Image (cartoon, rainbow, N blue to C red):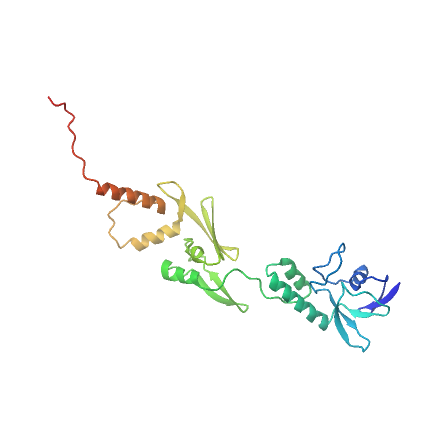
Length: 261
């Protein structure tokens, strides 16, 4: 049995045991991601770093999954050097897997701050511009929160038209229709739920009530010479094409049903 000192605590370990195994066998936590007890250690993640005392009394960082125990060895699983080494390791890992919840949870337990997770938005402002310049609602705006520029919605101004989702180059804004309800979301957070109207032609849901009211308000100044119908784009085009064909046809000649004598 070999005696070593972990965090100034004397612990015993069998020869050829790794520092990681010795620490865990005595209830001392050392974080890892790439380690598995059934496999040979590789030291790939570098999160299991510990500070080891050298002969000179200085401390050096080594990987506990690879380091074998030695008699009288002194090491620490916490401290400024260890924190710095683990921070470097976690930053490299999160750069390769920015959406990993496990890495972020581990960093949180270690008290290490990582860059915020990407939200799919490239801050091109296309959604903001189209909502303002084309739709005229200004339901989206850019605002700085905790040092990050974020696209924020104004649910009261959103009409649920989905134009922002259609123009978004990265699909950071999404539209889902289910059971006559349209839901608009950004960063997986719903900011607009709107009931849909049915098309009088095909019976399918096609537009929100707020969207239809906005179009009616915009066309109000024009002379109202036609009967109003609620048609989707496909049916409106279909009926319009039929009307144009009928208008181009020559008028029918009256037929004489009487038999010629």
